[in-house]
Image (tube, helix red, strand yellow):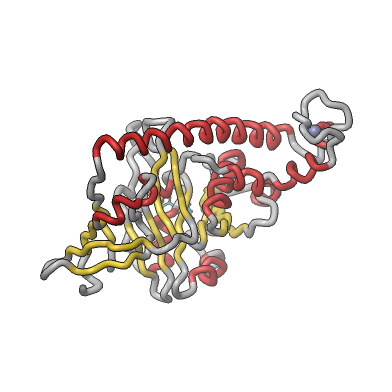
Length: 314
Ligand SMILES: Nc1nc2c(ncn2[C@@H]2O[C@H](COP(=O)(O)OP(=O)(O)OP(=O)(O)O)[C@@H](O)[C@H]2O)c(=O)[nH]1
Ligand SMILES: [Zn+2]
């Protein structure tokens, strides 16, 4: 198949039958064993190779459904603009999802040209993302892009995560060294329209790849327990010093978390964010077991259906 032809791939019956979850079907980013069917650009997937990272999200409009967004991402650039978009609590959420997926997160702070209190914001990000690389960028300078490029060596797949209008497409165009993606994503209506509306896997001039899908850009959390623990490693470490192992960090004597809150080494907002994500996640875990049963029942009732995925190329 020529690289310029977009291929339409379908999964064979074995792939369908072996799938215990909807997430076992092929998705954007998957490496697959596939065979051509006749002349055109159609091919059949015989096997999905093991995934090194998986991005799941809560399906839009449902709180009990997972959706596989993309796989095999090595690096996820968590993009946040240094303007009204700036929100470290949201960053903690995205970071939890990123760590949980198996990809390496890197924080990219965009639009530094319009920020007046960069140092203050940097400190807030450092507190929210301990141990994570933070890169400042502006579309007006090459600084920043030069720090991002080394992460995108040949064979590496990256994805960008962040709200609409923070400058993700602008960044991708700069990485592509051409204006391929439409930019100008700041919403000017109340319908939540986004510039990026379709799924894409873009090949960069130096051999790296960027997955740019609208689903990847705004992820709802779907069971990210280990990611939450990693994002809030400071709180998890404090909890180890509490007198009681099952400390709820509320009223117990000898609570190291309460002590840190009192002496100001841990901020109230960060603690609340941690508790909120944990609660949300517990609910998801519950929904997940419910879903496993539902999928099993559905498969028994309906048999297996073919699933089609569009594998883009350039
Ligand atoms: N001041 C300033 N504006 C920028 C910068 N980067 C991007 N912009 C502008 O911000 C707007 C949104 O940029 P996009 O790249 O389309 O944003 P996006 O994140 O891809 O948006 P969606 O596709 O909706 O998710 C455009 O008008 C850009 O020109 C920057 O570094 N500084
Ligand atoms: Zn405690």
